[in-house]
Each structure stands twice: as C-alpha cells, then as structure tokens.
Image (cartoon, rainbow, N blue to C red; front, side, top):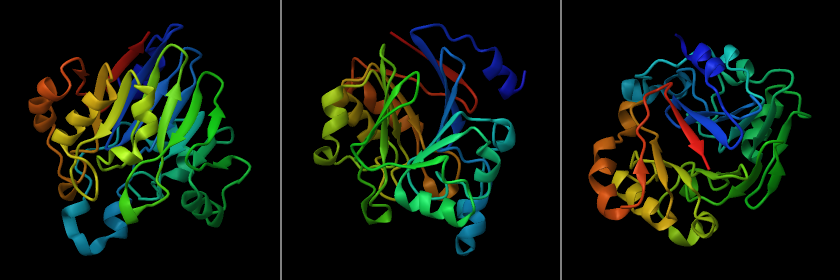
Length: 259
C-alpha cells in the first residue's frame, strides 16, 4: 500500500487525529472529519539547487513519500522561509484551489512574487489565533536566531489534546514560555543540533520541561549537513522526561493522537 492509500484508509474517530511524518520537518495531520493539515512539507531537492556551493551537503537523501501534487492539503502551515520548510519548487503543486495557507510575512511576500492567489495566503505573527474548523491554531515564538527572526511555532488545539510543533528553535526557555505554560500532550521537536536548532539531548530536556506525554522528533536524515542523531534523544529522554513516550516515526508512518 502506498502512502496516499494509507492516509485515505487510516481511520480517525472523534477525539483522535492521525499524525504522519513526511520526512525532514514535514507532517500531515488527518482529522476526524477527513481534513488534511500539512506542516512544512519538503518534497523537492531545491535546497541543494539553491545552495550549490555546499555540493552534496544539502543533497536530499530520503525520497518524498508521494508526489507533491497528490498530497492535496486543506490547510498548509509554513513556519518560516528556509527552503527545507518553504519548498519553493513544490509549493505550486501543494497549493490547490481550496488550500488555505497560513505563514509568516517573509513567506507570504515570496508567494505574492510567485503569483499565488493571496486570498488563499494568510499572514500570521507570533501570538495570532485562528480557527481551522476542527482545531484552533495559536502561533508561538521560537528562537531561530538571526537566520529567521520571524519564524513561527504552532500550537494546535483539537479540544481533546494539544499538538505543539516547535518549528526550528534553540532551547531558549525565555522565548518558549507559551508552550511551556500550555503543557501540550504531544510535542514535535527538532533534534538536528545544527543551524540554531536544539539537538537530541536538548530536545529530551525540553520535552521534560513541557511535561508532554508524547515527543515526536524530526529534522534529521534528510541532508548530510543537517546532522541529527535519534539515538541521542533515545539515550537522554528516560532521565530528562521519564513520563514522556518517545515516538520515532519512519517516513510515512503515523501516530494516533487521542484524548
């Protein structure tokens, strides 16, 4: 069974959501109503194309789970303008006639220059709240340094559970007070430890601080230069977050979020 068949046949009851890892920092969330919320999908090899001086350092190592044009998101969330999150070569295939895009100002400005219908593109700043039919969205701060000062994290409130997508961030507690105060049940955290992001040990520490029940690591094994060692978070989470279950997903694999 291919990935899209798996998504289509994956049953989601009331009080549940299916979280599929697309690879890199990308996720697809299937709701009980069958809607698809997609976060930061990376489907092309545009990072290597745009940074040729790094040679194979930004070569894509893992193939995408499907073709971008077949994903058909109802909602597309783009946390910031770096091209492993804002895939400029695939975004035209990802955004269909009914897709609603929520992102920061730098991405929206690029999409306007690319000729997108800006009636579908909604600019968010830190602290904004949006209702997405089956969940509420709160944009939160993250510390991606001067690389992307307007980068966003996302808190999705499904009523029965909170899902926190940290985005690209260092472990800077004073910048992360909102998610720390919410104590989300499920946290998606980067572990690559490069370009300003926390590594696996720091992600384990952050999971303990958040008090989350489940931690899903991401942002590893796509590019050689991004580093990221899932064994590191495996080693550290028992002591740093003993009440947290670590969920390591394969590309295309799902985790069922429940009450």
